[in-house]
Image (cartoon, rainbow, N blue to C red; front, side, top):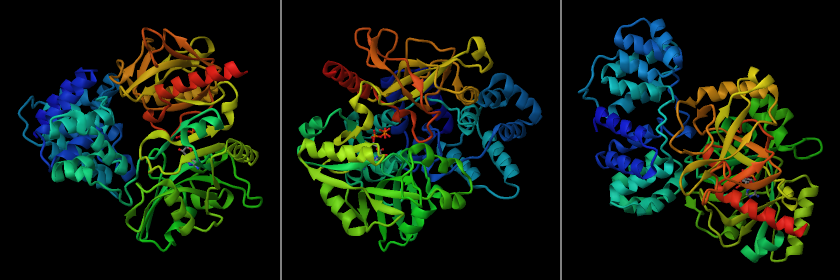
Length: 576
Ligand code: ATP
């Protein structure tokens, strides 16, 4: 497809907040796109060259971008930079400067490939080369193309299109109906790369997607757990089941292929470099390929005691990782296995996967298996739960014996029960920041007084407000929040945000914070779970973490979670 035609569709996309319209526009784009181009087109719409775990970045910041625009249109770089500071959108600056108003002939694929070439440039002289490369791309485009290229380069395309919308559009484009989305999603859950999945769909058709299998080095979207408030509920849901320790560290999905080892976070980022000791030990293993799921925690080498999450997270902040691993060594607790020597185990029952773990691993100080029992008795679960808490763990995860590995799904195949559920609402809640209110009084100095926070509505693929959070942050954190949020501020409510309250400043839904609250209440002000004008809200929320780098906006708690917590809260109240 010509890039100019594609950009006209992007203009249409920008105009609509309605999901159905977005699906229609995108499916028109996809149906006009051929198999050579679909991968790049899907990635472009996702505002990336490749998914984050490939670590491919353009590496172009404000000044470089300004120089590229200046070079393309024969202007002075500082004039362009000034203009950018005034307008705040490099896309608009480039659009104004470009004199070709229409008719540019270059294709989406050509633009994508050229941007990819720029990302690959490194070493001496790379800054100049990247600037030249980008200016060459701009010269091939009309002013409209220049707008979208510069927004893409600066990470500010902001089309507001979620993965679910792209999958439905692909389904519609290729099969004429949105129903094939479920199959596309299954494939996506197995590789976390929508561009690649679309490539398979276009090259091998529906059969290619139906046959889709996991492969080492492409992260599987992690299985997630539902929650319950009592052991009786676990038995009711699962009958005889496995009860596993719930450890509070980093989720780590470990891949091995030949000699290469990679580790992916819960958020599917490549965290291999944080975990040298685990990488070395997996490298030594005698299998051609492996995919494992587990939790990595730091521990005290002298006493063997596991450290809490607050200490484990320090590993991420330190630079000299080899040195840190002497003081704060990591241990991987393996709790699942999805691939062994090229054979997918994902559809095997949990018990079989677990016996593979027992067959393959013997416990060492760096890699060990979680402790697990199989039972159908509530009192045995209670005993296991109590002893988990006594050893400082977070709780338990109950697992359905015959369940497959539910990639990318939160369902009752895994059920978590944590320390806090026995009291009213002492569980923490993960919220996504939707905007902020400017500070008053002494908070005026920070520029921010509270954030508007929301939860994810998985059905509608939207973020709905649930509370304002103004306490729990330190002064330093407020100042940092102000900076971080201003980097992602937008002029109007993003398409995927649904609120009644209007914050002073809207931001792209991106950052997750964890809060504690006293209670979930019904409220006409917040849109989370809203029916007939009444939604749900949090009473007295306070932040207990700063921004969580391990979670994406869609990983915040869902509307469904809030409804469940509300029901549990009612039950506890009745009991107490
Ligand atoms: P939480 O904040 O409760 O950990 P979460 O949103 O990160 O929640 P959940 O699906 O709710 O994720 O809980 C499962 C998480 O618990 C997993 O992401 C994993 O990191 C962690 N975990 C610890 N031990 C286990 C285990 N034995 N089996 C499965 N998950 C475990």
